[in-house]
Image (tube, rainbow, N blue to C red; front, top):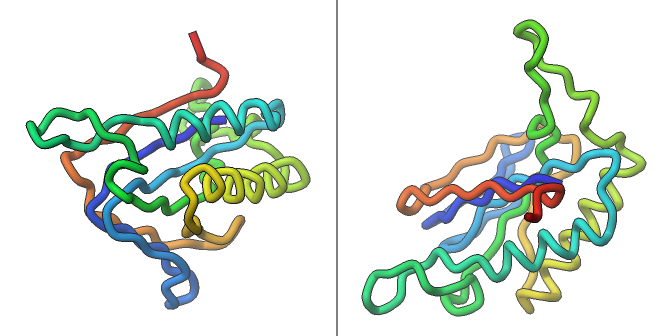
Amino acid sequence: MIAVIQRVSSASVTIEDKVHGQIEAGFLVLLGITHSDTQEDLEWLGRKIIGLRVFGDEEGKMNLDLKSVNGDILLISQFTLHASTKKGNRPSFIEAARHDVAIPLYENMIRFLGKELEKPIQCGLFGADMKVALLNDGPVTIVIDSKNRS
């Protein structure tokens, strides 16, 4: 499971010309799920996201986590994070999980993050054509892969 986490001042996702989810300060999380991901990957990654200390403290140092700043999360499914570009110029998405694996894990991540953050998680719609807008704060962008824990 791969997450691209962007610290944002605001972010939104629009589907068919309607805003489906939006946040102010917090994280825009692009989540890529592969066929070998498990609930253990999900929980490990979810705890890393919630605990990521990339918000400025009173001295301006990145010392605070999402809860400390009362931040929000906009979670977007992003199968293209598992693209392989080793051969040719057309990406292969063979490592991206099929719907029967990815949808339950995506929905579980929404619930897990909401429980950990103790507030609702804004999200996109799995498989939809989404327009994501963000105002990256910093910019701060972190990539975490649950298969690369050491």
